[in-house]
Length: 421
Image (cartoon, rainbow, N blue to C red):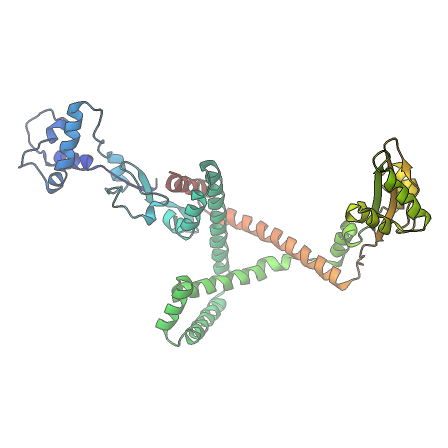
């Protein structure tokens, strides 16, 4: 169970104080109304401070307007570390999106689980991303905010687990000589950092805190962890990331069309109505007889885009392999670029076609050095990701003593309780 802060009403506080002061040996029945006007001898400081609120609640109850005093806090909540606080006095930053009201709970701490013996607390987990969570939740409806919040918690938890496991594994692999070498490097690096950031420890601390609210010790710990992770990558993952020449050849063949794109053919069309465009049809026929090419005729008629109609990838069999009607393919097959085809006459329209251009795609050979290096880098990156993921799965099963699924579920439960009230 994670610890919660529960806001109690002043009535519940006064009632608890009154019960604690009643230590007589005479058996008697006690009701809440007995504390509405307590005698001066039985009043504690807390009870006197709450007199006006208790009286108001008692009067409201007597008048029958339906107001009821709040129930006192249960013994279970007191046993788990709940604290009494007023809704107005709670820390606004720790409340997330809005202030707490009387009777509402706010998880203030909680041991979620352990990673390699290191405890993971909810406050420590959420503090770096709290502002981001509040902004995301405020900008979306509840259903969308719930989905995003859960995904954000899952991603951060996965990164936290991976970091802890990798660093712990890297530390365990260090020999005594490597540990001494690492310590010497850190000491030298710290001296260099201090020299570069003002020449004194205080100046270096001020510089680091100004950049990222990080102390010198935290900065050195971060550098140490990065060195350990790189060393582990070199020792455990990099040797498994092997890309042979055969792998490069197979990848090139699999993506042959990408490196050898088909030529592109652009087709133009002038389409006129046999009834409404009789004059323009005569103009086209006259210009064709004069030997004008398609672009100039389309420009004279004001056809949009110079008469451009469709663009296709040209298959190996040429125009005959295009997904067009036989009538169109017969008229443009073998047609010179820019030449006007014979007309296609229909009941209501007449059309002329043309091949506007045929663009040959840039082909890149397997023996192009840039192609080889690019394919090798892609394959290495892909295999490195695979090997790293496989190695992390091995570490999870070997090192983690707690149930990661249960820890993740508890963090999501706390996040929803805090930020989706």
